[in-house]
Length: 618
Image (cartoon, rainbow, N blue to C red; front, top):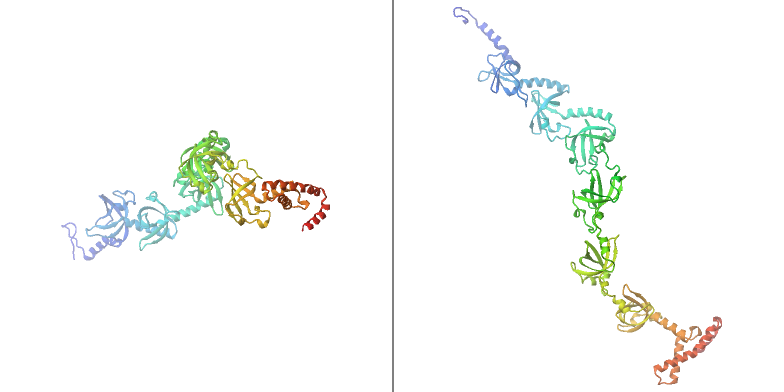
């Protein structure tokens, strides 16, 4: 076979072997380059594609976006020499199939494999989100970053890390599957370990250091000191009361803190911010003297009182008992409210314990003192029944205070529940002031005192020892209930019914019987009399003995009275009782000298004579 080439006037003959050699020389290298990275020259940039000559019979096109790092604009121009991956010699349009991205990936994979084997860090940029994590560009190779490997602590906002070149550690890679897993956390932990050791070596208590707020909790904030975290407790953030750290700090904020405590064994660090400021409790006694009145803001309310801020960092407690003169047993929240401006008086200052006791009611007029100056004991007053309890009535008085009427001061005749049923809540009543106790804040009132005591009127001049005639109104096992003239109630105990034990029986009497008894006690408080028949009998015997003889003479009261009665009978059976009395008295007078004579005889001498006389009588 002969082929003519060149000038038609010149005939050059070429064999088949020569032609095949020329083809091999021209295309042999390109066939062997498929699936490899080759160098090419940028011919032109047409729209969103780049035309590249790689020395083949036709050029190839590569997408412009493949020449830029994700998140940045492509930096390429005509004439640049670039590495591209030759996928095929030509496509359906006769152009070479090229890829800049695969070229970069092949180059990157080679470098990444070396870094993985040598456990070296690689640089990359986070550029996208996927399920469970993020995608990272490692100089052309795409790697997966799990969400748990982003930071040593959970990251709420990943945006500041997006598109920023930073080191990563390759955890796993499989070139055949194109799978790479990286970790940013491993790099941070390694760096933090180095910084931690360096920081802990030179850390001392009292040292002031700069840190970044990493996290906020209800009890404080964690501050990154550069490789190691310290706890800034909420009570050490400021001298004033702070309910939540978010009132003072924000995540990411740079703060100066002081090392309060440092435990080298557990590596726990306690930090403080307020220690860098002057302590407002210094010279507190001079700032807030006793009984001084100041204005403060209510910062917190509890069941037992309220805290009032006098200045930033200085709070005092107003106990619930010091809030109001009149409102007792009321929750502090019903008297004042949070953030309210109030006037307070300093009651006590303890600088050592950092406590100040305050009072609100002391800055106001004392209604109890005003009441005492306006109403003296014995004054009549009118008020509304505010409450009825088991022990009395509470009556509203001027000055928004209450006075109490005890059950025993409601009525002279009734007592207990019987007296209360006559009153109802909201009714207006008149009462008399019985007592005013300013210290205990108590005012005692009485209704029955508005009228005279019927017991005193009925008792009149009755006194202990008097003998009265009474009527039996009730018979009990313990004695007799009696009524004395005038309506007075009395009681005779069982043991006071008679001198003789055999006669001390209440059932000997019936309701309505009239008996004489001696007054042994007058209870003006309970309006009751204590009476005794026994005492009356003893009294009568003593009087008879004093007039008619002595028991020492051997003659009893019965003997003397019997003799008098017999004599009266002898003088005349028709004699009346009135006539018999002088006769009895005369008989008694006749016996009196004999009794007196006996009394003058010594007891030792009189004893035998008394025995002989007794035997004769028997």
